[in-house]
Length: 240
Image 1 (tube, rainbow, N blue to C red):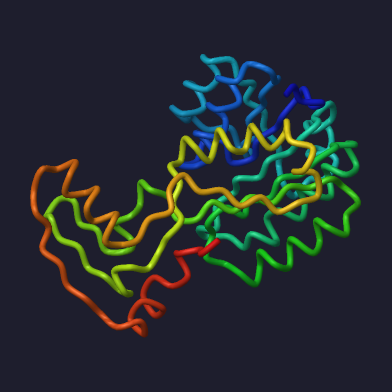
Image 2: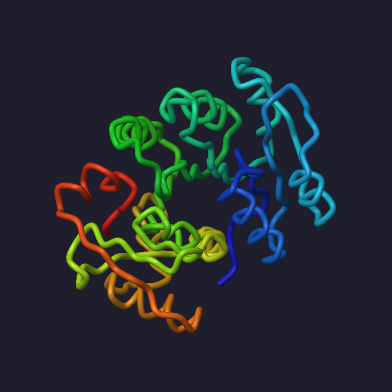
């Protein structure tokens, strides 16, 4: 199915996840792809690489609304992949949302995914829903590239379980999150909706089996209580 949208602007497109989302749109070939970076302009290898593949790199001062509005004119969809590190996701995304509305952007996809800042996320979701813009909120579970966060130590061939080994977890690779994001623009049901995606849904024991199959080596295992799970990594894991 084709998309009604033509121009996509991705804020945070040179970050860990953002880069994969930009690549997915470029690989799809159906969109004009822009990567919005903050001023001042700085050298960035990922930006150079994405530009060489066809992305347009644009810059704006997020504190200057008129500047943000100007760079967003002609954009159909804004995708925010702004990081939660050293920033407040609500405060960092509101200027982008305000400018997007004034620039007549059609749809806004917020920086939800897997960020451990639930209060700020919920607050911004409410702001987005009440903005009048179309929206799609995407949840993807834990990133497969970061299973070490929940106890899988590939280097030392160890697995630490913070929950029952039969506990099911939803995980998705960074590249697949990018592909799913592209597909939401072709799905009528993604308009004003929450989309939950998962590349795999396996138990901790099944993930351990995958690690052992790939490495060809046995992993030693240790276990901790559920209390330790929620204290140490509970905010990292999103159960869909």
